[in-house]
Image (tube, rainbow, N blue to C red):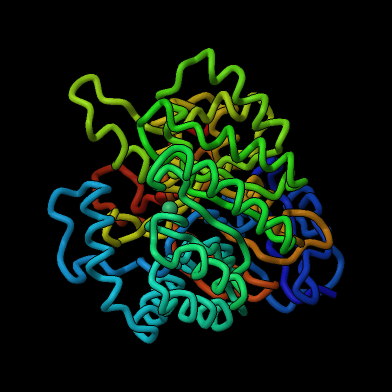
Length: 434
Ligand SMILES: [Zn+2]
């Protein structure tokens, strides 16, 4: 009756001892496993025992740079570790990029992503070099990985839409080539006015082409960088509600509180999706400060409280801007808890949602979720619940795509040789469980 059954799983909503029956690549049944006996009828082709394990929908990275990933050290290392040297370094690397090398690095990253249960990625693709070799490469990657990762591409004018000689033309060409989303970087244009003009022009293009928008917006500590206000207003004017994302929004950290009390309701009215990148924001913002140093992450708690959809991105892994990262969205969530100081039980549950369902909403992913009829895309974690998953960043014991296991990792179990103590320790068991 089922192709596969995952037995006795814990779910993100707190339900425990649940069996998940999978048929034809979809979730066909979700039912409690009463008294330890399987009560899902029928014989399954394969069974995965998920006792004491959390089973979740896959992780989603709504903000990434796959054309830069794994380029660390090319052509040299970022000595200062700053955003500005990172941008300069990328400028040095850009003319040396080849399609083959871009594809190879991206595919290597996607192997890592799958092993981490990360099956949906939205990547910004730099359109500043009119050769558009980045776009050609990422379109090829998108096709190649389609069986296991859904990749969305954003046309991203890294050096500025108006600031780069062919910025306007190159972005249009990228969209003609099949890029899915309109990007922008208003705070990097020459003036505030040109930044605002770029937001207007890019929203107009999105409306005309029926595409979503996702801009790097106000990635700065400057409290007067207020392009998110323009982005929200143009979203409403062009009828793009719900289809627009503001990525980073770090200037909101430093804004005047009174101004923010007006801005957040405007963002809510425009149904803006907010995409902070906690790892990168804490690393790169506040660099001009002495002490105290600002955290530089946007106001996550306040945005969520206003009903704004917040989704966290990884942004970078081993590239000119960030030498760290491992494709682990739980590492992103772990940092978010610390930087946003969202350490309450309900806070942490919201952080987990920002790595999964909120991102699905921001990216408009269909068939996502833990419900009958959804795609059987699932991750079995070596942790008992979402709080433990965020604490441990545990092994992804099994990663399923359309009901097929596409990655397995052995559980982390330590062998102990201690007098009078157990012989082994399962890293995923909660030591405070009572
Ligand atoms: Zn970015």
